[in-house]
Image (cartoon, rainbow, N blue to C red; front, side, top):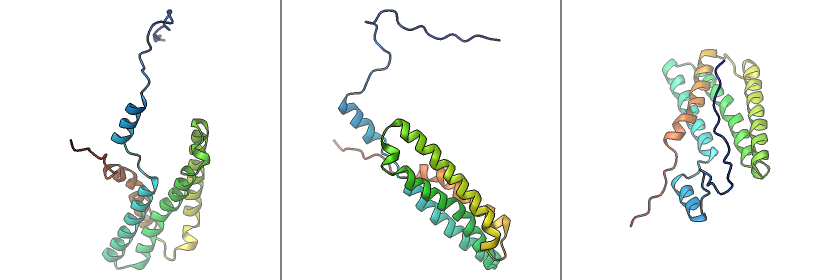
Length: 160
């Protein structure tokens, strides 16, 4: 079994750490260059994509149940994502790094459970459910995460 080498700790306390802390001005500059993206931006994108996909599905097939199936598939991603966003933007989830990590895991489990529950009750809620159409809506809404990154708010540049 190959062994890996780990760099030894510095023996002298005077030796400088390779990681330097940022000053307040440097930290502010980093925040300005990398603005936070609201999770609600993603949820709004999922809603828009779900509505458009449902209309396209309905118009292409001429069958109303296909449109409802696509819309329900997108909703099976949208509703849990909205619950997750609400949970993660609450005050409790931002107390410190530990509560943020636990909150993330907790709300992610809630999101998965809610998605599964919505999928289980889909045949009872959507008349004439089309599973392929539902899956198309589900996948399109999930892919919004990547599209939202591409259209994320850009940092403001200061003109000299």
